[in-house]
Length: 247
Ligand code: NAP
Image (cartoon, rainbow, N blue to C red; front, side, top):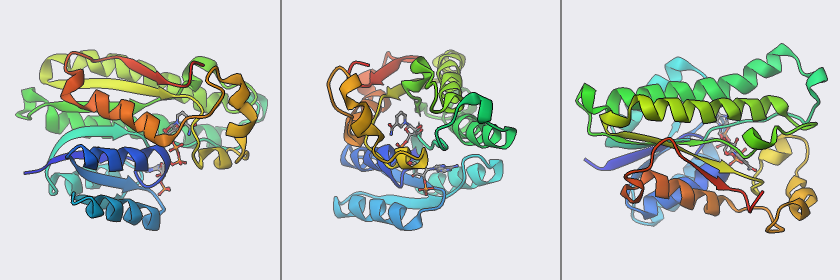
């Protein structure tokens, strides 16, 4: 059976770069996406062109039933040894005084509940206490959990703060069950997520505030994720790698 990594939100941005790098490192890859089938299939074709295996699986990570289906599809593809909890959203830049409950629910459902549900399914399959072979989970948090993102999206930053706490807690909960749980905290990375916040050129505006004077590339985050997934990080759990150019 091939060793499979599930990358949630693997169709674009950091997730797509992670999916391709995971394939290059020898994993079979389950490329999850929510809406953009074409982008997910393009990632699959890129991986197949490398002579590796991948499948695209549609599932909204915020929906419990769809997460269960995602894991069933991945399981039929090979042994799940890794989960990258990458799917994440933000919404239009806004001060807290303008935010409503519906927006908070959307932000928390995908960014927090989605990560919990996927991790739960992974633990059920990987835990040596449940007959599994162990594995690694990497949560994609954000430097926003340290910055708070005032005036832009405090809701999103707070959701990522929850992911940081989740990483520490779950890591300790399953540390003696063969599962490592870590997180990366990207800074400002050049992807389409900024357009969703209403500012496609956000990286350009903010790059002078980053000590390295530039935004990051998705591939630079992917390399940190692949390190944490790999046996190179065999004694590392409950840890964070900031991929943020010094900010
Ligand atoms: P992106 O370019 O907007 O891509 C987001 C990906 O997540 C897409 O593949 C999208 O799939 C998927 N997705 C969104 N909601 C989903 C859901 N409910 N279920 C399944 N898939 C879903 O974003 P990105 O910049 O690569 O961000 C990836 C992760 O890095 C996120 O967790 C984000 O918070 C984090 N991050 C990004 C930055 C940055 O500056 N870019 C900084 C820090 C942290 P579809 O296209 O099919 O809908």
